[in-house]
Length: 225
Image (tube, rainbow, N blue to C red; front, side):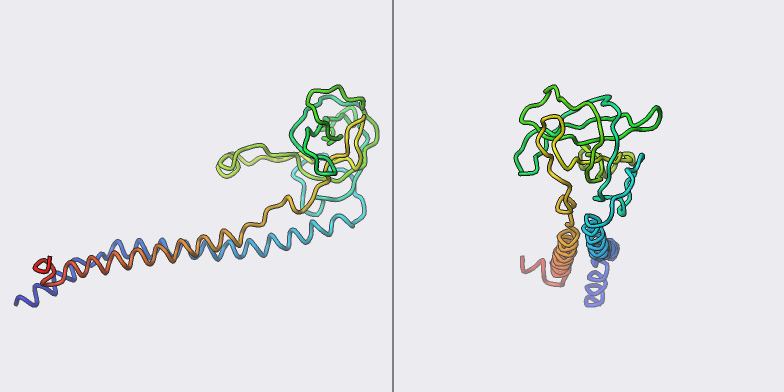
C-alpha cells in the first residue's frame, strides 16, 4: 500500500503541462533557427544579384519606390531642373573620410515626385553649395531609413524613395562613397546559431529542473534532508 501511494505521488509530481509548454518553446526556437538558415540562402542569392547589377547596362531612374532588387545598384542618370531642398546627413566620401553627405531634392519636370540626389560630401554641415541643377550620373540606391530597430520591426511599413548617388562631387563637394553590397547585413547564420543555442540551453535547464523535482518527490528524499 505504501509503495503504491509513493508511486502515485511521483506520478502526480511530474510536470506534464510545464513539459508540454517547454517542448513547444524548444520546437519554436529550433523552427526559428531553421527559418534563419533559409533566410541566409535567400540573402546570399539577393547579394549575388545586387553585386551583378553593378556591371549591367544603365537603366532609367525610377520615379517612385520601392526600389526592386533588379534596379538597386544599377547605373542611371537624371536631369535635375532645379534643387528644391538641401539637407545634410552623416556620411563619408569615396576615400572613406567621414563628413556630411549633401542630399538634394530635385525637380525633374512640372509634375512628378522629382529625384533625390547625393551630390557630394563636405566636412561641414550647412554650407552653401554651388550646384543648382543639371544632368547627374550615378548609382541607384534607397534613401536612408533613420528609424530605430524597434521602429523598423514594429512600426508601419515605410516605402523608401529611390536615391541616386553621384559618381562625382557636384558644386565643389567631394565625391560621395558609392553604394556597396557590403552595406547589406547578412547575419542570418548568426541568428540561426543563437536560436539553436537558446533551444539547447532551455532543454538542458528544463531537464535538470525536472530531474531535481522528481528526485525530491522520491520516497525517503525528505528523510535524507
